[in-house]
Image (cartoon, rainbow, N blue to C red; front, top):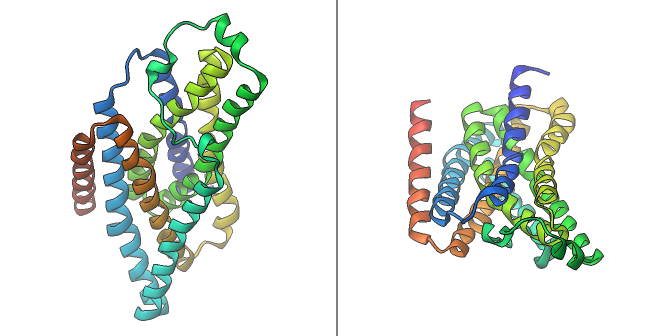
Amino acid sequence: MNDNTLFALLITLFAGLATGIGSLIGFFAKKTNKKFLCFSLGLSAGVMVYIAFMEMLHGARLSLGELYGSDRGDIITTLLFFGGMILAGVIDRLIPETENPHELHNVEEMQGEDNQHHHHAANRKLRHTAIFSAIVLAIHNFPEGIATFVTAYTDIGAGIAIAVAVAIHNIPEGIAVSVPIYHATGSRKRAFWYSFFSGFAEPAGALVAWAVLMPFITPALVSLIMAAVAGIMIYIAFDELLPATHYYGENHIALYGLFIGMAVMAASLILL
C-alpha cells in the first residue's frame, strides 16, 4: 500500500465518521443552529458543483479526448457523467421514502433525559425501523466512499475538498439517524453509536475500491471513474444538499455558502 492509497483511505474514513459529529450535536446541543447548518450545506454544495464541473469532468474530457479522439472522448465523458447521476438516483429510488436518511430532523427532537417512557413505548417494529434507517444510511454512503477514495487517490487537493464536502453533508444525516433511534430506544447513547457506526460505510466503500479497482488502475480507467464520480457529486449537491437547506429555512444563507464554496475551490485550483 503506497502513501497515496493510505492517505485516500484515511480522509475517506474522516468523511464517513462525520456522521458521529451529527450524533454528538443531537446528543449535547439544546437547539439546532439552522443558519450554520444551511451555510455549511451550501458551502458543501458549492465545493462539489465547482470541482465536479471544473476539475473532474473537464479533466476526464481532456484525458479521454487524448486517448480516444475528441468526439469519441466527449461522448464517453458525457455518458459516464449522466451514468453517475443515474446510479446515484437509482440508489435513492430503491430506498423507501420513510426510511430515507435525508428525511431531516432537528436536535430539539432529542431533548429530555433518557427515560423509561420512551423505552416502554418503543415496540419491536419501531426499533426495527430505526435500525433500518442506520443501515440505509450506510448503503447510501457506500458509493460516496468509493468516489472520495478514487478522487483522493488521483488528485490529493481535489480529494481533500471532496472529503470535507462529504463530511459536512454527513453531519445532518447523523442527526437524521440519531433522532428516530432515540425515539425507538429512549437511549441517546445507542442513538449516537448506531449513527456513528453507519459512517463506516464510506471507508468500506474505499476499501472495496482499493481491492477491486487498484489492480486494474490505468490513466484511462481513472478518467472514466472521474467522469462518473462528477455525476454522482452533482446529484448529491442538487438532490440532497440544497433541498436540505429548505427544510432548515435559511435559503439565502445557503446561497451565500454556495458562492463561497465555489470561490474557495476556484482559488485553490488556481493556486495549487
